[in-house]
Length: 114
Image 1 (cartoon, rainbow, N blue to C red):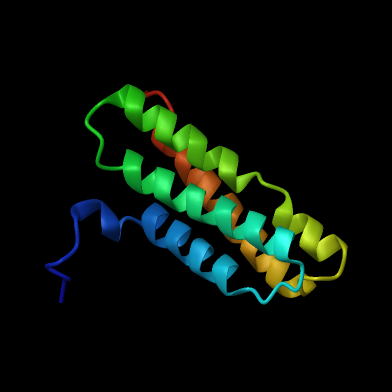
Image 2 (tube, rainbow, N blue to C red):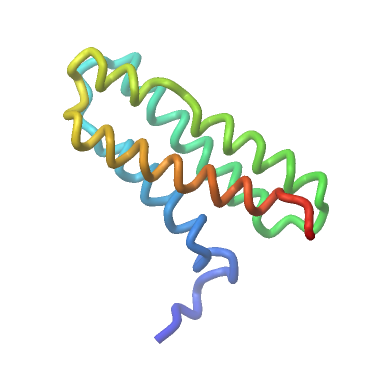
């Protein structure tokens, strides 16, 4: 049964994956406060910019929002956390894979129509 309280774009795979990434990044128990803050801000920014762009009618606004989202996905906080031993390697790999998947979907959303 479909959730009647969702906006249409909220069922898109890119939206669901970006929301999962933000939630999982937020839940990581990083002892380094600065790194934790950076990771949380970057993952939230990726999700929120995506959510702003998906319902936009203007192609320019969509491209801008998706570019900001993609940029936030490239933040190095997660990779750094793994490199210095603060994020378990398996969790870091899973989150990096999820971020890469979201970025591929964003790229597809902004690709010129063929």
